[in-house]
Length: 338
Image 1: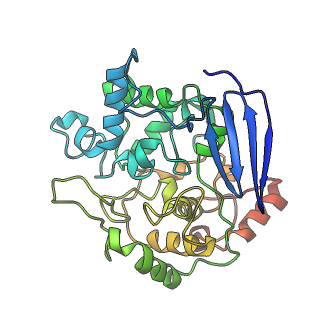
Image 2: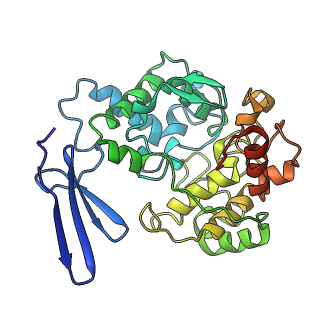
């Protein structure tokens, strides 16, 4: 790691305030609402890259294989795998359909720093779990498949890649890269008609009117993934919760236009289109009732029961969510945001 630049500079130019802060080995530069991050030699900080940063790594081949699993999931661990025993995923999604740019894009469930947050307590299992167990959850839900053996080359490669991306990440950058940005959820039931309008304007060009995405042929990987139907995530996935989907959409869609610093959709548009996407049929996960053993820990927008309240299944799926949140605060002293 490079040495700290021991100084704080404040530059004033016209009506723009530019602030440089030196923390750890990274310099933070803020202009307006946007932040940039530089190391000592004024090189912008960025996550490690498979194409430029693998040289000299002891586990380079394993890390690269993990990257391949994440970017070519259907071909390695999915329906297109030549080895039938390795068809762990049940749909044609790639991991990077949700974890964009192979998990290196901030605000898209990035893998940058993720390994540093495990072991981690998760309410869905009501216990402290490992990174490998977190991947298990994705396999069973987002990938609509089943768990990979923890000692398999594919699992070990994915973990090696995530750990590699988590090395030497400044604390402030971990915060920037993890999860999604928060959305100010409207205090109303999601409107599927408005959601369809947003979808038609911003999403249809890539995902199609039928939501089935685009791929070169039936045996090819998707260029743009299906948002519902048999080849999409199942109803137990986090993305099937309207609030979670709205956060992802607000930060990242339309693709290549929105990012963590500049969004295209309003909070309301992201909310309504998330509901529209999740109004269609998709695969059903088996035994969803065992999720969240302590039902009070269940997110309010989890669309399947049972719940620790008497709100309807429709309200848990489409809102309004604020009354449910108020109930948990008043009844159980639990403050919920999603």
